Image 1 (cartoon, one colour):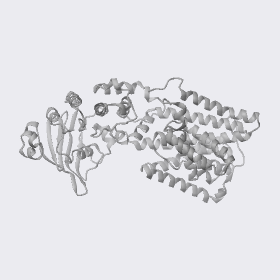
Image 2 (cartoon, helix red, strand yellow):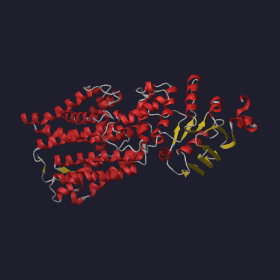
Image 3 (cartoon, helix red, strand yellow):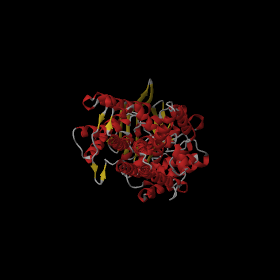
Image 4 (tube, chains in turn brown, green):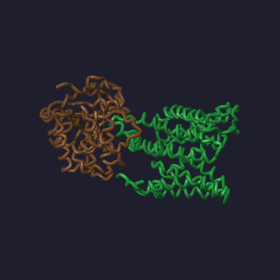
Length: 248
Length: 314
């Protein structure tokens, strides 16, 4: 499989603490690469460096063969990197459809169009509804985000990312705060996406990780201490000691 | 989510413009030219307030220096008229161009900041222009600069106060229509989306800066036109057009009328300036009465007066 994303030697320090300490990581085309580790291990920091919200102190990030280490976040999104946030990050006063429409606008290029009404533009509404129905939210299109249930908001996060038709999805704890029913719906959704889009998945739910991941890397104190197939990682003594503990 | 065809907002807008259109009739019938000048001034400030609402209400960008564009537009007219230019087309065209360029310059720098810093830097730029105008001794400095005469624009003869009045009314109507088109367009949706959640906009690949800058320039340009109209109406330009208190007043009009409503700021301008006139005849301490009224409106009407008038779908 062709390499989509290559992170090499990425280091990020906050004060004296290395949130990323020489991280090497790759995601192949169509692969689901899960990133696990205890709280504070630097998982979100790493995702933010790949998405462009944070710039690494050292190291390189190569996406689709291009060095994007210094590129701003919007440019990376347009190149095919889409992220979902650990803490829901939506436009609260917009409806689900309006949120999705904004994503479609972004996908269709610049939005320097000043005259035509975007709120009943079929070229926007059609694809936006399609994005909502992919995550089962089409019936809730007209509901303001603030009135959506938590699980629905999480699903909308994924819908926005998918609307960009990315090559790589950066998923930062997509199941965060979900009940079991919502979580299993989310796992089914992500399973249905497997193969069509590559994923870098940060998740605490081990059931989800072992069901979805083709490869797992374990991050502890900003360092990758193990990386391999789910079976290899499950069997790794150091990982068991550092992270999986009794639960594994 | 979409408003009905004949909404309260639409009725109120039509009513508002009908009343404004009748002011010259009233002032002619009852020979009360004072009202003609008052409401011409009101509409000019309404135009400035509508322009500010685009960046403040829809962009979430609190520009505390919008009087600067009023001043730039006015001074463009005043200085060119001083040098003998009498084509209104050239005078107003120069005002529009000058304010657009100044807004581009100020916006390009100010929009690199946000929040309190943005407020302060826009204020600082406006103050610089204020003191620049004061220092222009050749153009009257502190005392301001009278404009000798008004010219013609197409079928309009601006020497007629009534014709100038209707021209201002048309400019305000066009600005409102343009504003409504813009906020409903793709551009407007990005502007508003980035106001509520910049992080989300960035994650979608929408870089807010360039959208905000374009909105800022549009806003400054319309405000510059308001300045040109003000200079034409008063036959006078003065640094006081750019005073920071003036910028504050325009903000008050927007907040009082209702942020992110476009038509609200027109109501805000009408109410503020008319109240000012009425209360000033009662007492010189009229601010003591106006102040609490403002506080009450801000406390109890989250979308300003327009929220009351237009209801939920406004």
